[in-house]
Length: 387
Image (cartoon, rainbow, N blue to C red; front, side, top):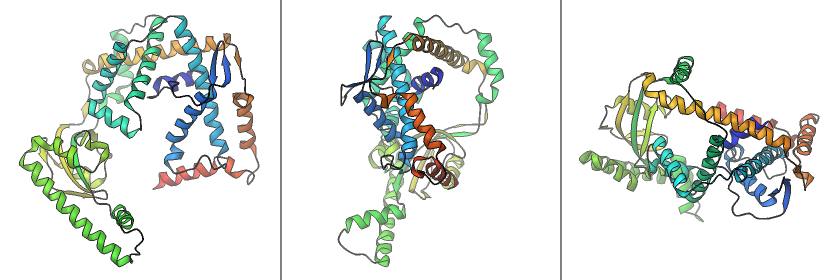
């Protein structure tokens, strides 16, 4: 894998490996005077497997039938760890330090970009990231940023920004959008049936009995939604507080039910129709979707249009600066790799050897080692896309 792709992976990732909690100190690779340990690899591999789309689709990557996928991930992780080791060595050589103040400033900038601390907390929770890990990862990103800045000043003129704007005009057009919050009373029939079965564990329920209990539970949910609706309509200023206390959507409840701005096509049809029919600062009646009962509060609206250059000029300059810094660090990585002494203490972690195994699997005749080829996973991806 070329340095640029590796660097983009490192720079764009929300989570950079921080090297804490190692399971083993045994070196598997030596990069100059630094070592990459078995524990570092295992921790990063565990995270990659846990967060992969295959895991989210329910594919068991450890069942011995997905060696092709495992080896692809292995090569990527080995290369990322080598690049990180090279960059860490250069950062240390240049005496680059990151203070707590630097990290806090970067976190404040991220909070400003996502909208609020509550929104950031929601994103971290949805991705299973602890606040302490996030803080360490931000510190790593700041370190890379400082390294890039040490390589030379990047100058972006107003003319450069204007040229980018004109050449990428479609990026700055936006469709009609609404900004909304919601409160959900979950009432999906299939989910309720599973809950009722769990509550009646050990007792065999007939289909008729189960359906009757589900319908009864749905009536209770509807009544709960109506009570909440009356409460928020009585005092709309308390919508966020009530959402935090009573919404059954864990992803948004912590943030007062806030969904931010969204265009058409992002929500289920029933929700979308109701949200776009509302005027700013108005609350819907109960909206029924496959998820249950929603109460929607629209707080703002953006008509379709285009952001003027003056409004996005600074953002464009930041973007171009970042891209140029990525290229500079990429060039540095290529130079460091050419001059590095890399020893594969354990040949099982030599990316060339792993690539050879991948090629053998890929070239295997149809029907041989089928579990080691990507067809099954690829078919599952395509099946899901059809749904």
